[in-house]
Image (cartoon, rainbow, N blue to C red; front, top):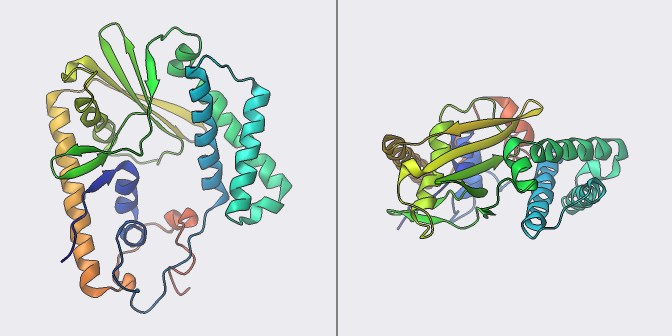
Length: 278
């Protein structure tokens, strides 16, 4: 019997919206080999490995900051270089032997961290203007009806009687038509946290996202209607994911699954090798 998909996350939603074929290869459990072709070997672009390294260094820095340990620029640079070189070598990326490309990626990564740390929220946390704050890992899901939702904020802080939920996206897409509802999914996490209020008007939602060389700050004051629309978005997403899974299991033919709307999305896809015959 087919097991229904129950998990929702922002990354799953983005992959599903951009390329159904990648979603099948990345998130749908295979019960037998693909018809007509083998499963492509995963490949990682040096750009994605840079972003992965930035995320790791930033959260390591945030962990120490929460303990009262302040990093110097030299420490940040050293950590960034180590993470990137390690990731390039681990995934046999050709940039691991290109010193000019590595230097450029390290500089790009460091610039993201520096500018993020200089954003209003992080600057106030660093100088102790915001005294009550914590950070979380999005690897834990929260139950929402029959769904498992990965929607925890990256940072939570309180100013007076307002709780602020912050999500950080290190590489945003240019078009984000449902950004408000995607960000408000953090409210579902807050409702399962016994230490936080259960009222939407007690929260402010923040999205920090990097695109076109700079960080963008989206601020939302949620309402009950916003929360309801967010729940409907999640339900609809998972419903459509299950429709796709049913169709794939019917044919077991990965070539019958729709491709990305734009070939630009294929440039950094981890399954691009072997996805098509040409």
